[in-house]
Length: 389
Image 1: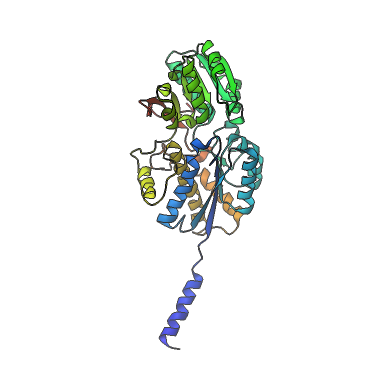
Image 2: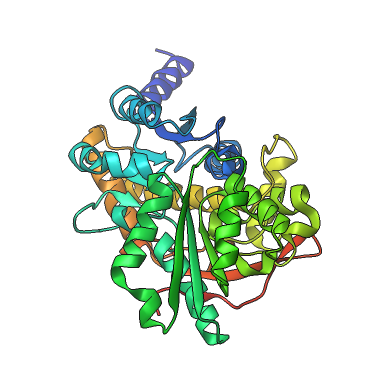
């Protein structure tokens, strides 16, 4: 046997002992088309960050990520079907899902399937580390966001609050929780009215006349960007200025001032993530990715998704490291480890998109600030506020 033959045999032996890299599956669904598509940048943001890892680092811990992006169309039956596909067919190690209605409907299934789940909803009904140990979110709950607005009003001497919400679980659920808790009254404020409207309403003039008759100091909107546009447009018709209105973090969209112009000036919303284009380290990564790839949505929601991608990938990487650098062959074991590692994420640097993340409470961050439309753009008008205080 000559030297070349021995070398070839040795090389084959080395190759056979080198473990094959696995593929890590992450399943994402959002409203890619449908009534809430204006805020779907977060779904693209998660996918793009994971693809950024594929392109720059060979994936997560050297394992390629298959980031599957699906369209739930904001239809509950479609979202429930997608969830089952992600669990049973796509073998996802992590799932990111969309609506409040779907996460509430899926809570028990998520527990039973024992699959880590990052919800895009901020409903407190889905946040309970003991009862729902596999569900995570990345920011203050809707109720905590409202509390920021109410405290701001009380500090400025305002008194009368009107709550407006859509006739779906996303709108109705958090408002019901706030009313049951009596938070408004505890702050020395008065709930002047609660106004429910159709989620797909295109004319809310009658509701705006009702709101005007209540003489509010604050009108808090628990709905999404398309509804905020209708509300502010029709508020202007009846002489209600936008500065009376405040929305949650899904009401920070450049579409609002772009479509409404002066009618949007003064409108405020809760900001939990840095704006697209901010001078922060994460934006350098995004620009690097954008130099070679198309970015679908250049907005604050894309930043949210990029941040969630950072958290998801960090948990997966730590689970792989804990398994000796290999993806666990047992999917159930892998999912359980990823869940544990998500909960263990503390002081996680997301490149300045938020203050450092801490998922011990399954929220990542409970800090936000108030932003206001000035000159057609949102500007922060408060410091970061911890919604728990």
